[in-house]
Each structure stands twice: as structure tokens, then as C-alpha cells.
Image 1 (cartoon, one colour):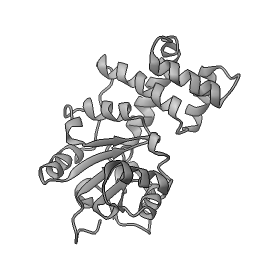
Image 2 (cartoon, one colour):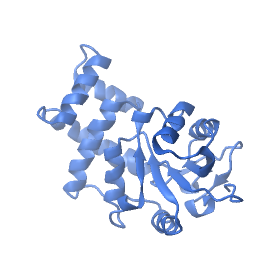
Image 3 (tube, helix red, strand yellow):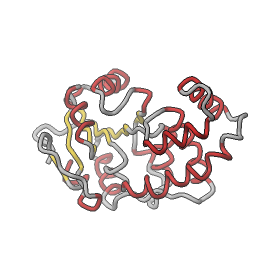
Image 4 (tube, helix red, strand yellow):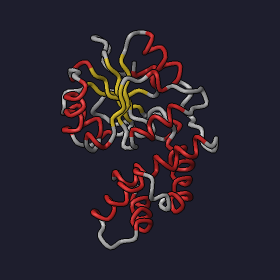
Length: 225
């Protein structure tokens, strides 16, 4: 349970394992991207594809782009070109009606209650900002993107680095003690706490998340708030 003696002003949310089942990411989104990436790489007039190809060439000179992307996917690497291309794949899938995000049942009502109570809501995920907006824009409960004031991705840095959370504070103007960061990953919570944020682990039994011992723990968003 998060410390509620002084309520936070901002709730910063992870996605996978926190608001969205891990299975949706690994069994729906990742396979969809893997299937459609070859065709996407042929869209060389698309500026997102152009930039990603340039980044891949710089990161892995001489390696065919699709081969490198497959390596990164096998490693679940948190690298910008892969994330941007996955996001573009998913955008096309959502727009075609082939994808729809399946949030945990408690997420939509809790987010709306927090927003109505005056809390600022934001997202920080290793998925690109575009991918984050797609997840919340195409949910079974409708478009929830208007609930969020900001979306942060790997452009501020990796989620296990304290400096990334300092960047978020610098960009947003928030004070660390006013921000509650929710994630299922202890290493991310460690980094956020080091940067001065308040933290709470979301350890959902349905995902088999192992509760840590160094931070407050909740099994759902309502328990965390």
C-alpha cells in the first residue's frame, strides 16, 4: 500500500503488468508486429521507417534490418528503432480494427476517479509515445487518452536509470515528492525512488508478479491510490 498520508498530485504509470496484462503484449502485440514488420520495412517513403532504418544501420552496420529487428525482438530489447517500428505496425492494426487493448478491469474506473479527484495522470513506458497513445486510444472501454497529461518513453532514458526520472521531473516541472510512480518491476521502482519519486509496486496475482520487499506493494490500482 502506498503512503497516503500526503496524497500525491501526479500518478505516473507503467503499462505492461500495471494497467495492461503482460499476456496482451507478448501474445498479441509482439506477434502482430513480428508478422507485419517485413511489409512495413518496404514503406521506405514513411519518415518513421526511414529514421528507424538509419538508426538500425548505425547500431548494426552491415546487418540486414529485418535480421537485426528479429534479434532485438528475441531479446525483448528496449531500443528506439524497434519500438518505433512496432508502434507503427500497431497503429495500422488498431486502425484496421485488428487490435484492441485489453486493460485490467480496475484500470478504467480508477483512472477516471483519480482524474475527477484532480490528480494529474501520466504514462512512462519503454514503448514509444505513439504506441502508448494507441493502447489507451483503442481499448475495450473506448478512447482513454484524454485522461493523461503526458506520455514519456525511451527518449527520456531507460526505466531502470534514476536519471530518466530526473529528466521527467525536469521536463514536467513536477516535484519528486508529489509524484507516485506505479510499476510491476522492482528495478524501475528502485530507480524512481532514487530520483526522489514516491513508488508502489503493482503485483497482480493474475500475472504472477512477485512482490518485492523494499517498496509498498498493491495488487491493483485502487489499492495503490
